[in-house]
Image (tube, rainbow, N blue to C red):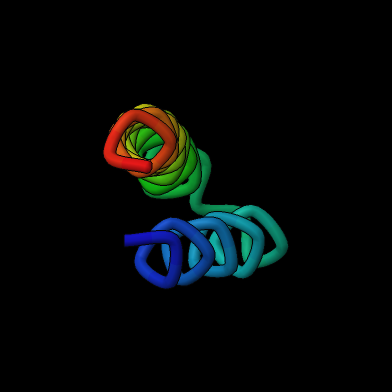
Length: 53
């Protein structure tokens, strides 16, 4: 999931360079949402791994 967040971030940067503001904003928001989901899932798996010990 982190890979997809990075890919959408790169797409947003490239779109912003070429002047596609709407596409850049959309890709950046998707990247931000995927990154937050990744962080939440990572923390859940970290906590559950600590509790199983």
